[in-house]
Image (cartoon, rainbow, N blue to C red; front, side):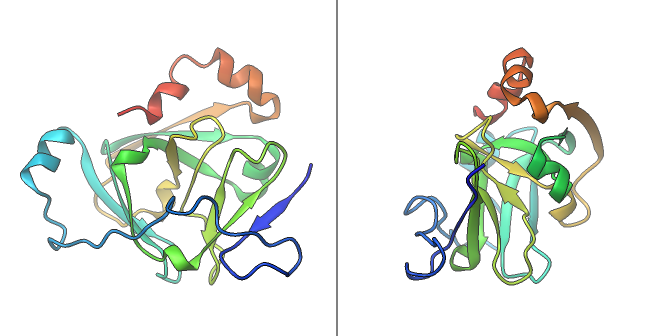
Amino acid sequence: MDPEVRSDRAQGGLGEKPLVTPGRFREEPDMDGGKSAPETLVEYRGLVRHTGGCHCGAIRFEVWASADLHVFNCNCSICTKKQNRHFIVPASRFKLLKGADNLTTYTFNTHRAQHTFCKTCGVQSFYTPRSNPDGYGIAPHCLDDGTVQTIVTEDINGKEWEKAVKEHKTIRDMSKP
């Protein structure tokens, strides 16, 4: 494994590189105080606007998803160490509201998964999963109270990642709008 920590600080210290892809995380202010435009309501019919963030509050986001969450419990090396449980959404249903400058990213092995976390408190409230690089894995425990009705947890064998993802019937589709 070839761990790599990436941050938005200037290059020069212990293998630091610029944060992910320029523009990947940009803050989009919540201009309407949490009320959505009519076109958003049509696009996300049947979904709930969840909000959440890290422990210290430096990172805030919104995500449109079902009130009934399908959460993956992966046993790969990093998910086991972090106790990472997550549900997957398309990138179009995720909006970073605050904290782009306070995110840093850890990658390893294939460097496809982008494990983003808060530089201040260290909490990973969302990340870009290897299985769904066109979406986000959201930590349900980082959502604000009041919008989740149920959580169904599915174990996935991340120790045999390629086989598990190949055999899974729906995981790749979860990041499609």
